[in-house]
Image 1 (tube, rainbow, N blue to C red):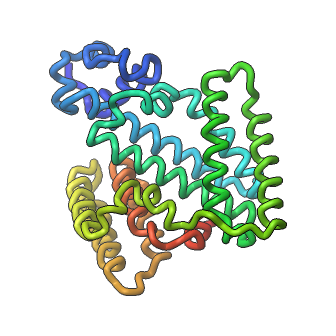
Image 2: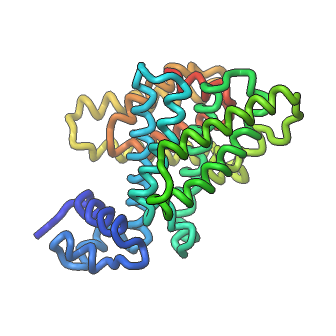
Image 3: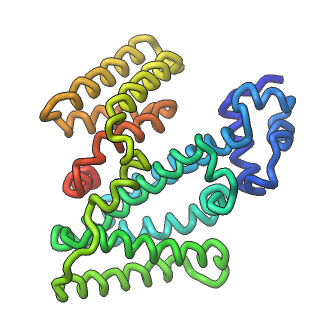
Length: 306
């Protein structure tokens, strides 16, 4: 019996979700797929590689659900913010063995897993920034990064209690409690005319998911991303005309971002179109994060409201 790479990932996701990384073996995954252990290694050379793929797919699914919240027109910005906190808690409870417990495992030192963790932190910070800007407006702009930092600390602490003590804490009540305290904090920060401690530069390490020490290599990183995108398009299960259209879009983006004044709205629209292809999603996200890593919170807010 032969199985696809996706079927192997699906089995691994199910078992990692139920048992965790340490308690799941490649043999377990092979048996769940109904194949020999060696067949798993045809797709993934190690359990760490397989876990990294599962981790990445779980993140993409999470952010897909986050994006769906933006498309609910009946929700106010504060209601959207509240719902995304609840979503964060509920999703991380469900996938705690994958998205929470990895911090205590040797996998976090794996060279292929580390960039994923950086990317995860970067995407979360961007999302937090967009939400806070939308909820509190330009008035919070000077103190935005301090509020982001405080919010992340609060969320992380309550996430621990939610994940491991979910029976004693209500998701809705906890989310409302956090939002209420943020409102009080925002009011105090503005009325006190506080001097900001943190700036966007303080967060560049996260926003660039660990690439801040490799700025000289950024151009090469983009070249490699576009090469990988081109190769991925070649094997898409779609017609040659569609693949050609996708390649044209990639060439347009590559050409546009090399200009001194790129048309960012067109680049963004092109990225959204490419992202519709499941096989390209992770690459598009990496590309978007690099392109917009230096655009600042104003652009983040614009992208959020589109």
